[in-house]
Image (cartoon, rainbow, N blue to C red; front, side, top):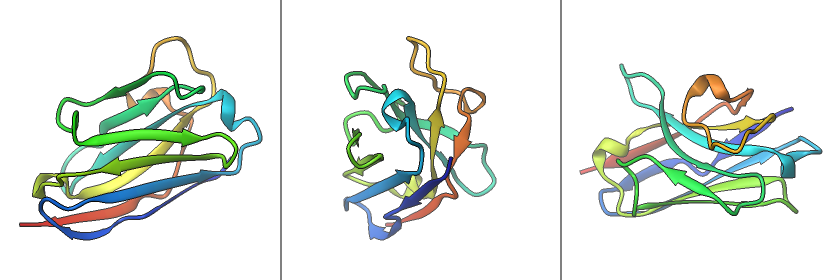
Length: 125
């Protein structure tokens, strides 16, 4: 299983970015997917997660209302639409796959089995 994150870049505060994560798994449609981020000197933190069907989502309080996670199972891809970006959103963003999902959408790094390489988002003030 391979996950390839893309779409990061440098934007000014208030701007928007759309991250993508393409996967190679044939059973992508059965996985819950998540986005995490890691700022310099900080631990990796949860951002958003989406159920295998796309019917359920959950967000970190820090991004709620500004970020939307979605997926296209026909393209084996999960997305993270980020709006009203703030300098504190600056981080490397990682996508992750939970290939044995339970009913609960996971928010901890240990719950995810596969990780992408990360894509850097820099928000300038």
